[in-house]
Image (cartoon, rainbow, N blue to C red; front, side):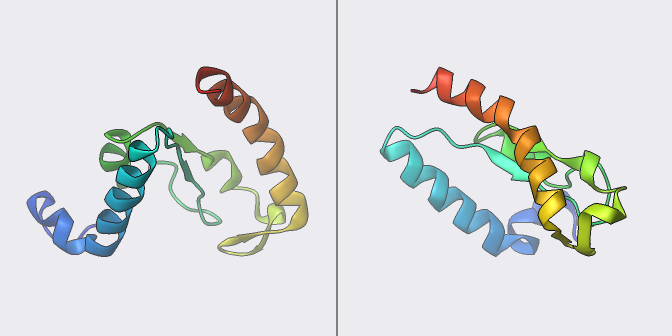
Length: 103
């Protein structure tokens, strides 16, 4: 969670925000749409703390459904092969829809 006031988010999350902006600018310069994927840690919150920041650049796909399933995690932050398969299957539809919009 943030420790500083919202007005200082660029300071608190400086690296993440700086490089996200650079990646988005490079993609935009080449006509490439950007999508963000939020992967929770095991038992992590469903809400994405920086969702408003990411939404200004593109959609954010939130895989919060994974969080309560300890059996899909090798440890608190890494999916097992089975968990990754579940995530991949979940991503098929949104990725296909995004590709149809931007062939």
